[in-house]
Length: 224
View 1 (cartoon, one colour):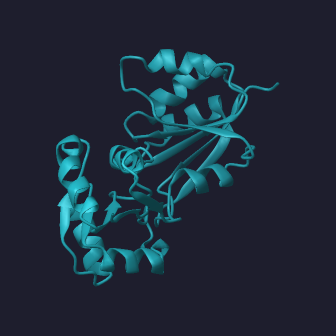
View 2 (cartoon, rainbow, N blue to C red):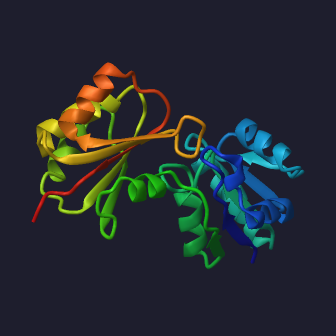
């Protein structure tokens, strides 16, 4: 049997790439990439010459069988996403699950992921938290938020710049305007920024300042 390596890649700053990640990507028989162009640029930067195969949400069901055949034949496969740790709001779950089902070893390298620095830097309790990732864009969005109304743990969400204000406004409606929260954008990049305050204050801030970049929203849980 071969082995599947899940390899985190930088969410912004290329210096966050680990030496071990570079070695694994060099040694693997196959590298699965969410976007071969994005990952191709990363591999080129680190002088890694390896074959890339597309593995994304639109083809992962179809490509799964061929990947499993290569793993069963004894090959080493490395999985990367465009940024961060595969499986965290990115493709990766299906192949990891299938490997676990069929007794193929899976090893995830420690490395970059956007929500951890945003959570730790938020100033909100991070000993207990729930990661919600991206909320549904339309159907089921309010239902999901209403289900979190009584959540006492710190909550972590990913959001696009186009829906940040919408999310914060809905948070006010569901969690209350005085709930403490933190908004981080462009983690580890040149324009990294964290804004903290009540949900009402954050709505006012991003009404005045157009949201730009990739966002992590951290919201305090309900007081017990």
